[in-house]
Length: 349
Image 1 (tube, rainbow, N blue to C red):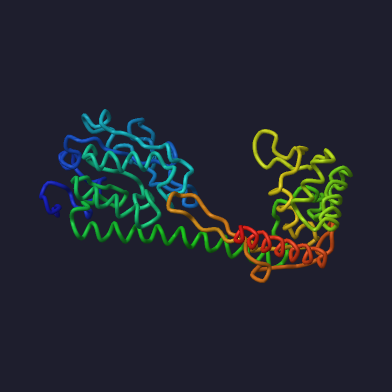
Image 2: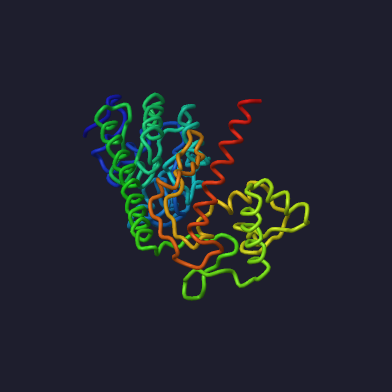
């Protein structure tokens, strides 16, 4: 029977279903098995969340596939040492950020507290090469085994490590393909002006899914006053000052929380006024590709607004608006001039 380099562990070519109690006992040693789950007591969903699933029949007696519940939970002295990690359900494996379960697993492996990591598809523990190969390196250094439906792997063995690396690369590529298909469908809809995006305050979807002005006349009056005031004063800051001096409130629609969709009236802020003035939806235009988003190392993202010349799709006069397209472009030119003047004045100071 093929064994790993250490001579004490069953090789990946030996399926765990046919492993004897002595083989599994040798694999576990005196350490705790760590079971990675995505869904409790059910099979993995090929289109679902990431993370390598193992049916929670382990330790509970529930069946995943025929006979799978007998892999570990019926072996003497095994149940008490099994630790199931399932707190990352529904979270993407594309990054380790905000995945407490994966971070716990990495920590336990690094401290040599884990004997074996089990899962139906262990490559889905991490869908990026950096996190996946870091885990493999730690497993190799601490003599921790990895197990999936195909067999048992020893990351300290070159052949096993090579196969695990290939599985991780395929898992990362699978995520890329899924995202590319979704992105392609989104772009095709945007090209046909059929992509539905949340409209700004003052514009709503009718029952026939066409955009129209908000039927609330107070909302319409506030927006028309904003555009008229900006055209008269030529400055977003002066527009804000006018609203504050006159005690005029400006509407905004809540996008999240228990009161999502409700209309809230509050004194306008400069950033809010700029947001409205820069939004082409108020000119009745459909625009896609105004921003670019990049991920940061900490898992967050940075969004950058592109100049009008770089917008991907622009269709003017697609739906009713508060101003026309020519007036919108004139507003953008005026805002750009104001921003340049502010920069020059700050440099002189």
